[in-house]
Image 1 (spheres, rainbow, N blue to C red):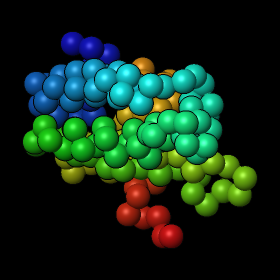
Image 2 (cartoon, rainbow, N blue to C red; image 1 turned 180 degrees about the vertical axis):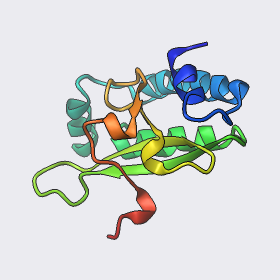
Image 3 (cartoon, one colour; image 1 turned 45 degrees about the horizontal axis):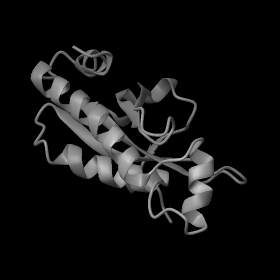
Image 4 (cartoon, rainbow, N blue to C red; image 1 turned 135 degrees about the vertical axis):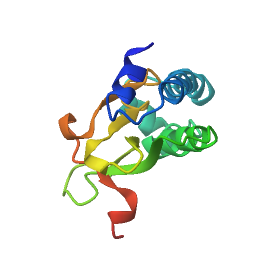
Length: 144
């Protein structure tokens, strides 16, 4: 079992081990696929510049989140829930960031894990929401 699968099963005794393994394997492998599809340049902020200038089509954090969330929702998970997380949307001079957040079904958003393929250019980063350096909120809580 991968470290991510272990972190997912640690979210709650109710998390199905097979689902955790499926989510982990899918998130890790699909993040690498997206990196190849986006033709990612490092560091991520440089790639963002290239997207914003029109030299790359996709690869902003919102693209990673949109694509990864769509793939993970297709897994039909029962014991895990998926969210679009947003950070720094209300902080002056800080760039907004988006990522997938997963929780055990019925548990709070802040008890979940950040799944962030953007941060390391396709090598999936994960961390408990409460321990991450970004102040995550569920997207539906963000008023635009």
